[in-house]
Length: 112
Image (cartoon, rainbow, N blue to C red; front, side, top):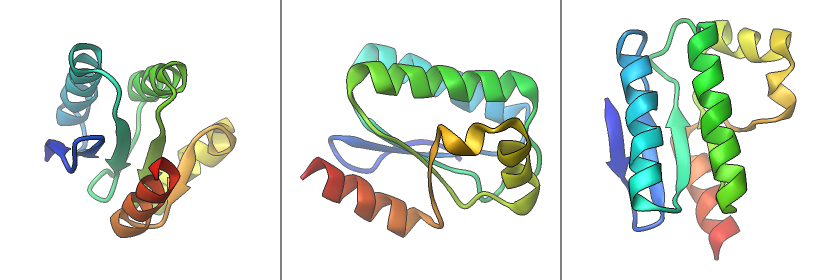
């Protein structure tokens, strides 16, 4: 789990359930503040639930990415997590991909 520098302009973040998720999202925000502009891919494949404080953190990441002109993609969302995005209406403001490979390909093509 954690943050991986996939390339010089793309970070891949593998999330786990809390308490690790909170720490990983906080680490991501700090990394982006210190190291500048990167596209970010967040992989949810091992996440089973999403609480309101982590939704707030994801919104901060989204805002920071938007302000810096970089992309944020979420992928591999289990049904339980996807339903949170649907119920809250957040499915309309985040970008999603079915899996890591598709998300990475999209980020690379968008940045080309």
